[in-house]
Image 1 (cartoon, helix red, strand yellow):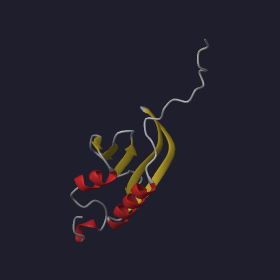
Image 2 (cartoon, helix red, strand yellow):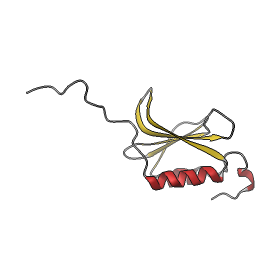
Image 3 (cartoon, helix red, strand yellow):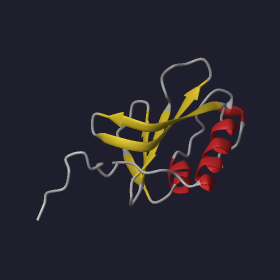
Length: 110
């Protein structure tokens, strides 16, 4: 019996989003005046993520919201908040309740 090679890839802490989720998130971000950036193969202090999505207000370098997907949940983190787990990207967006980003105050909540 042989041991597996040390170079076996580890399972990522975060997995990729579905295309439909990305489209929904992009539309939601645009509606609120936020810029969406997707970091592929992101490595953080707590693991590797296939995709990490950050939403930025125009002209800033600090993300207002960050999202990633695990096997069982979508994780959302606001700029000054703790990570929250949701069953889907839709549930995460619904939980935000208040408008976010430049120009969002004049638009009704979804």
